Image (cartoon, rainbow, N blue to C red; front, side, top):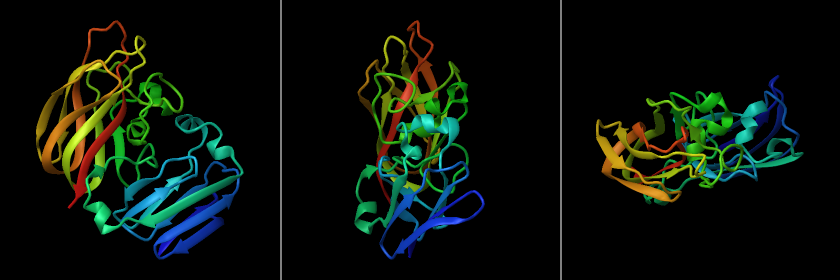
Length: 258
């Protein structure tokens, strides 16, 4: 049974819904700090946390997830007014076996959050520019590739604060067959610099180097059908542009579940 539950900070249940295959919930509330959405009832679900957020697949190792509604500065990575509207729609449905076997972007998770999570995919990094939501790692798997500006939604990105040792870790939560990945750099030139090369380290021990170009288009890197649980971007080499600000807009991985 798939269940959606919304709770206030004090534990009061504000709304709930359940269904064997596809649950829908309408919530009449301007979200307050401490509000939490809880979803349970399967390991592979397609969820949409609000009608103004894209949907995405999530993997729940314990068949449940906790989603604190973003508040304060965290909201700058989302559409303006999203969480202040008086009505919200949340959906959750089972992902079919046929879908799991199909090649798709297994990294996309618009519901990813900063900090620890109990659902995947999940992105973390060793640096995020000024520790601001607009530049945090979770932005690179939100499904958006608008990259001709920088800052608030829809131009959020992973910023590295000019660190030369920056890395970004994408944890898929379970092993998948990874065929290729695509990087979309932030391309707010000349404000932005770019990386000319980098490495991706895979959970199976592989270390793949790749070149990058000064472009806002997707740049593809083959992964050879390896079985991986996580991928880490590292050893990113900055161009000699005067700008100190290379950044990543989107990190996609195309493959399928085992």
